[in-house]
Structures are given as C-alpha cells and as structure tokens.
Length: 131
Figure 1: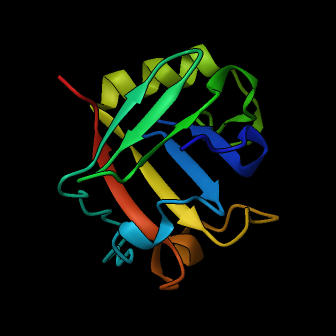
Figure 2: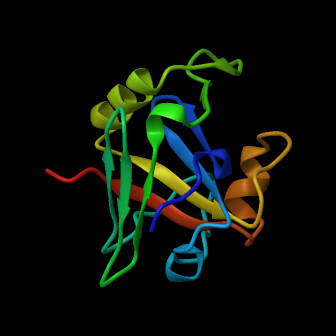
C-alpha cells in the first residue's frame, strides 16, 4: 500500500517520530498505551527509513510505503519545531535503531505529545529498523 505523503509528518529528534493519518495499517497496529511517556515496541513490525521511500512493515500482509522525499519533515531535535530534512530524519532513525510510528485519524494541528501518547486514539509504538 502507498500512503500519500501529505498524510504523514516526520518529526526529527533523538527518537524520531512518523505520524500517519488515514493509514491502511491503522487497525493492524496496537492501541498505544505509553506509560509515563515510555513508548512500547511494536512486536512483529519494522521500519526501513530511506531518503526516497520509508517502508513500514508489519506481520502478514500489513505494511505501507511512504514517498519520503516529498513528505513534510519537522526538526524537533533542538526543542523547537522548524522545517527539517528527510536525510537528517533517516540518520536519526538509524542512530536510534528505529522510530516511533503513530497512526491517527487525522494529523494534529499541534504536537501535543502527552495527548498523542496517552489519549488512547493513537495506534503504533516503537518500530525497530531492519538489521
């Protein structure tokens, strides 16, 4: 499945985040329950962060591809949000050994991390990169 890059937001940081709206894998991902901000690992899922394409792969036939080169990227690594670069996001994901992937009904107007991680409306978790 191909996910429209306009339905994604890549956020840079020590642990990078991929936000997805209307993702075809939404129901296949676990409901996110991040106790005290600790995001659980998604068993059976992985991510392949590349400059041109980002692959989110799940168990069985679950998975999707994002045309990453044209997807929006925010740089949250310095504490403030500003436009970012996909190559830097990929480097963050490689350095962290994966990324937090959150599937939502719609992309949020503002990044309220406590709400996104504990409201019970997000699905996903930490996806490791393929070795």
